[in-house]
Image 1 (cartoon, rainbow, N blue to C red):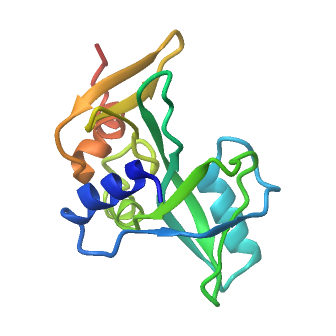
Image 2 (cartoon, rainbow, N blue to C red):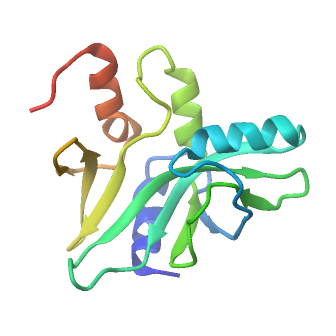
Image 3 (spheres, helix red, strand yellow):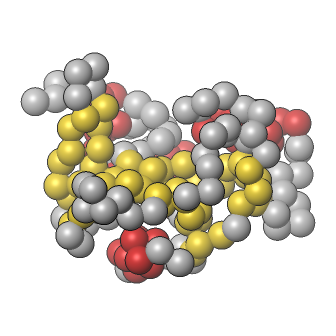
Length: 165
């Protein structure tokens, strides 16, 4: 298990009432690139006994940037407990971490957030930053705690019409 995976699990577990853990996921492909939520919903529609699950994909440490990318992601779990992902091109240099509270937060706050996918993260020197892609750049904002309100901050601000700096 990657060190960043252990660190993420530890940081999120302190704030969650659900078990957060690394899981093995079979990458099936067949969905649309960069559309994990809709891919997981489409899979569920076609496989009624499956469930949509939320979590993270943790990339291997990048020595050049001294950081690890941690991307919020959705996939499915089948009735027999098999985790499957139809989003293409994930690759094998990632580890999956289930964090079901992300999906629950987005469902309970659907009227307050712009989208159900929260901010992805960058971990560097033990510190987390949220990642936001703009038309011109990648903006990182330091984050002190991995609570759901902080992870969904950009989505809440976008929904409420607050402009970004």
